[in-house]
Length: 458
Image (cartoon, rainbow, N blue to C red):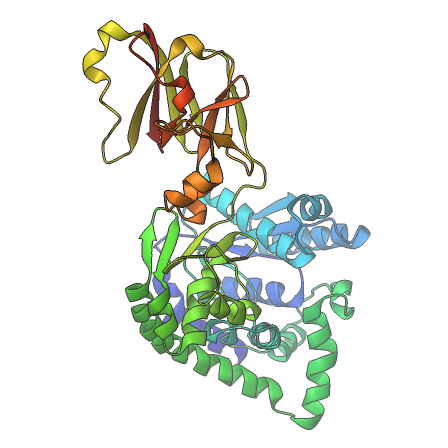
């Protein structure tokens, strides 16, 4: 059976049921042999396609040559074509990304834009020309870098959330190249594929050929392994998810896990990986995370986006704290929104609010109200996150106390402490917002005018 027949059989069984009647396919077309052959195969199979080409402007004249080739190809095949030109180097610099990651982000975000702005492509699946060799290389790269079962299965034929399908995945590069030669299909060569500048190229051009000298069937063996790993991953996920679901308690944007349950998890390395991987932690950090279970209170480990914090008998996974605290100057009465909610300041004659003075918090502590002597508070006020060295005189006390000690006594977790803001007047703390006012600014029997602090948590 030739490649076209195999492709059509695979398309009908795996992909055609996903396509709605009259729906087009968005084809990522670079002009290389893989995507060019895919364009021919889809067209010969009666699939209506719209080609999308990104000129990344990374290779100067060669990038423009690629674009011109794709334009000519689509004209000859009568395929509609969309082109995006982007300054990839600038994007890489701004986002601090590698070339390959930047290119992938640019490509997939553009697909989303097309689906959003072109009514004829709303909800369309995008087809990419990844093949068996790509999946093999991905699996090997993940293995060498450290990964779980999901990483070993290589590239999946479908990515449902991004609406990506990969119909060439069952076929090897040499099959695709032979089909192009046998059918007189022209394509272009990307000169960067011949260099070992990227890890994938080094693996493809150097490591795999050397291994094949010893194990000629290497790529076929690894590819079959990826297919088996895909089936194993299904069973693995079912078992692991069942355990993780019993362990993790979701509280807002934080995941809370009892230390004792985590320590009893079996197998602990696999369970730990599945817990931490979605939050940007690497497999190399697994031993550190396990050690953290026995660490002292408030110890933590960072990923680029999250932290795992030991908080007494709990492990808390939370988004990374802000690098810089916000400072907000309040010039006058009114509503001031900030990171953790909304603070409303208003003045009242004490005789008009006597019945309200005992009101401090309602709505399950989502709203807190405090009353201060307005006559001894000077504007502008400064609202900011607390800092080490801050102190105040807690209501009812004539001695000062460090804010850090006050928060420890309140038994707040590390993440809860980072959400605490204070309010200052003339460089003196008048309140820890939502928790306690300063005794020096309390109202007394002689007070005539009150400042009301109403804090609504977000």
